Length: 63
Image 1 (tube, rainbow, N blue to C red):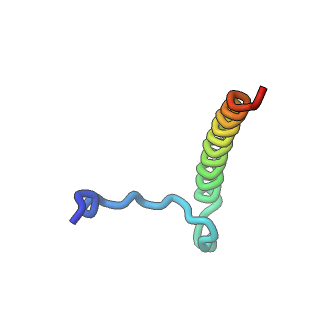
Image 2: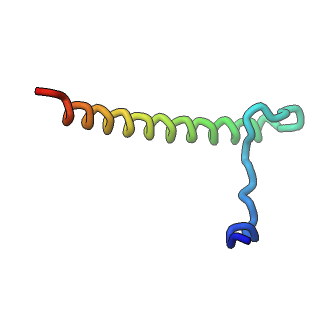
Image 3: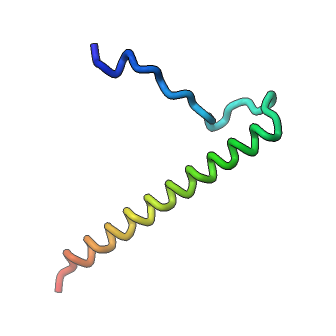
């Protein structure tokens, strides 16, 4: 058995496609803010990876 098996799993704050029927407007605002933060994090990582790839491509270009 793995050591991580006994750790509590983090609560999902939002699941894409979940039922929104019983959420209040405030809860929806919280989820929107959370998702915007996640989008910003994903975009920043994409920029980082894109620039790293560009540097690598320029490094190995035939001269």
